[in-house]
Each structure stands twice: as C-alpha cells, then as structure tokens.
Length: 328
Ligand SMILES: CC(C)(COP(=O)(O)OP(=O)(O)OC[C@H]1O[C@@H](n2cnc3c(N)ncnc32)[C@H](O)[C@@H]1OP(=O)(O)O)[C@@H](O)C(=O)NCCC(=O)NCCS
Image 1: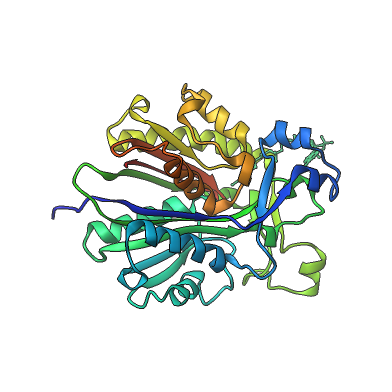
Image 2: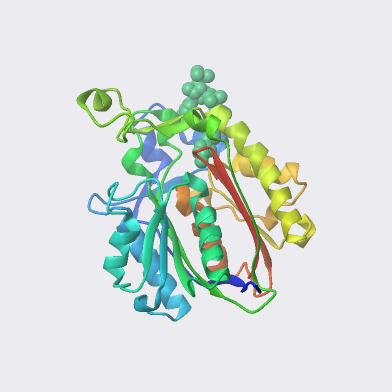
C-alpha cells in the first residue's frame, strides 16, 4: 500500500495575557532574577486567568490554526489534545474542545505523554492519515501547569508557565511533511517527575491536600541528566530514520524547559545556537505546549521557509521522549 505524505497545513498559538515575571516571584519565594536566569534562562511566563482552563487555551490556538489552514471546524475528522492538565479526568479536554469548536464530525481524545505529548500526538495523527482512516487532524499541545504548581516551592515554581500551540495536519505533496518519528519511554524513571495524587492510586483526600501531593514533584538534577542524554540520542535516531544528517537541518525546535539543557544538547551535537529556536525566556516550560509554541512562533516570525527541514525534539514525564524530522 502506498502511504500518503502527511504534514502541517495550519498553525496557531495562544498564551494567556497575565505575565508573571522573575521580579514577581522574588516577592513570593526566596529566589532572585539572577539565579533563575543563570540556571534556567527563564525571565517570565504567562499564567491563565482563574476562569481559563486548558480547553480555553486550546480553543484559542485551534481557532487560529483553522484560520491559517483555511478550514472550518466541521471539516475536522480528528482532534487530539496532548495535555497533563485536562479540564477534568473525563470528559476529555478534546471532547470539550470538539463541542466548543462545533467540530461535529471529529473523533476526539486526549493523549498523556507530558512534555513529549505534542510529538506523540503528531505521530499518532500521522499514522491515521497515512493509512487513509482520516483526512486531517487538529493536534494541540495545551497545558495549564500553574494549576498544579506549588507557588511556595522555589525549586519548581520558577520553571513553569501556561499556553497552547496547535497544528492542523493533512495530506501534503510527496517529499514534504513528516519524514520520521522517534518516540520512546523509560517508565522506570516515572517517579522523578510526577503528580502523585488525584488518580486511582491515591485519590484526593484531606491527607493528599495537606501533603501537597496535587502539585508537581520533580527531581531536577536527575531529570536534567535524562533530558540532555535523550535530546542527543533521540536527535541522532530520528535523523537516521529520516536519512538525514544534522547538517541538513535548517531549524531545531527543542522542548523549552531550560536553556542549559538546550545548550548542552546543541554542544553535544556540535550545532550553532542560531539554528535553534529558543523562547523559554518568555514562556518558561509549558509542557505539551512548549514545542508547538516554539514551532508556530518561529513560523510566524518567518524563520521557517517552504521546503526547510525542521527537527522537533522533546522529553518529559513518564519518562518519555519524542522527536520528528519534517519538511515544511
Ligand atoms: C531545577 C533546576 C533548574 C535546578 O538547577 P540546578 O543547577 O540543578 O540546581 P540544584 O538542584 O543544584 O540546586 C542548587 C541550589 O539552588 C537552590 N534553588 C533551587 N531553586 C531555586 C530558586 N528558584 N531560587 C534560588 N535558589 C534555588 C536549591 O535549593 C539548591 O540549594 P542548596 O544547594 O542549598 O540545596 C535544574 O535541575 C533543571 O532544570 N532540571 C530539569 C528540570 C526540567 O526540565 N523539568 C521539566 C522536564 S519536562
């Protein structure tokens, strides 16, 4: 069977209006701008308004993506929302969004792979479209990490922000679109980065609230080591699968968690920083939204031209990683 070529045919992004700066955080916990910038590269992050949930951020990004693809919502056949901060456990955020958009003909589900969720979702949609099951899909990485962040814990609260990035994927001319994917998981490292309570293992109770178990727990140093390692190995593997070398890549779009992780990966791969998108300074780590926010922003700024080869690579809770090479 001849597989169809699948690629990105529309893009959109959204970040909430409110900006939380390092100076604001100095008033909340024992930290300072110099520490945050030198250890993470982050200067500010956007925080959702109290009435905004993940589906609201996703909706804004989705509307923009549909517009850029020249499509209406009722033409959509599939919606995947990559998120670890769904509006509710169920219904899924994708179903809530399907209703808000009026995407009556779309199947809809959430995908949970933390910061790797967007690449996992694109790989999933690619499979559906390549084989002809669906003609198009709306893929959104959206997270409202501020809702699961402990703003009394300086080890984590400086690192995260809220946002959403969306793409529409569909059939593209041969030679364009996705060339390869590399997805992986190391479940054994799951305890290094997690939200302990609120699921079937540890349902919400007074004790879980008191124990702050509804907030992100992270072993920063171990996650850092994992991140640098898999950014390198996943990049090499996804290039090999695409039959490309790192010299062929016009733009690297890494997960925006920490500028030092990005710099270590770029050094390890011996690549100049000019070929890499960095916006962690403005948005911090927005989990599943991070890669699409960086990709869409780069496209909107004219940093990606038609025919350019782009490499996406991310890592996150699970532990997971995901990478893709695509021709724009
Ligand atoms: C979290 C992270 C920035 C910490 O940086 P680091 O250089 O490893 O810092 P350390 O953990 O060595 O901590 C150094 C000191 O800074 C302190 N510190 C931590 N956060 C601080 C803050 N916001 N302000 C000031 N000091 C802080 C620590 O308490 C520690 O003090 P101690 O030595 O007295 O205990 C880094 O480990 C990291 O980015 N890890 C990966 C996180 C990540 O990407 N997570 C998401 C994955 S998707």
